[in-house]
Length: 286
Ligand SMILES: N[C@@H](CCC(=O)N[C@@H](CS)C(=O)NCC(=O)O)C(=O)O
Ligand SMILES: [Fe+2]
Image (cartoon, rainbow, N blue to C red; front, top):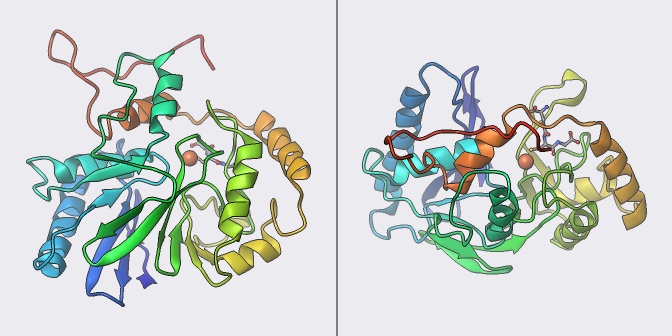
């Protein structure tokens, strides 16, 4: 499998070619909601996904067209667009079953939505196998950054969401609602049991020291030199470090808008009586 970075100034996509099969899957694509032409970007991306499916999956339609690692806003919006009439790809959107926990947590402070994950087409249990065309994969629950985080293992590649970042940056924060540093440590130890040469595809890259963006690492590299959690770092040491860092981090600026899209699997929140969808901002919470 080969990964290649594409994109303009506003977004980066990661088209992935699995050479063992003749399948090309676009598993992550970012859409900048604030860009003046986000609709255009979305159409372009959806067309690309659609073409890929037509070219490679004619003989065998995908069992799962799009999966979501950590409930990432832009990937979910793109997935929703692709499975809509406008996108015409007929994608299936899957997520870990613990999305229900995230939904129950946020329902306390955000407007009504179902809390059983019914906005998604498929809810993966821990260890559940899935297929994308001829590709076989499995979903491993890796909670900690959020309760719903999942890692997808496909062949010798793993898509780890916001558990591990590049070794020079460390790990995902654990102070979002439902996050837990103990849980993240145990999830990472689960990942470290994968074969050493497993290639990890990383979600965000915050480019420490201003270095160029990177998106791929291996279990061996992470075990040797992840700055937060290399081999030898114990659970209590990790948790103390993670909590101390989290105490100093601000909430992301777009946390509430993002979560509201996520709860609806990337679609606009249910319209109110006047037919308009709204994003709401709690003012005295978090
Ligand atoms: N400053 C960023 C926040 C970025 C952030 O919180 N990133 C999360 C991933 S969703 C994280 O885990 N960061 C880890 C860390 O900074 O230690 C923003 O406002 O968007
Ligand atoms: Fe995240």
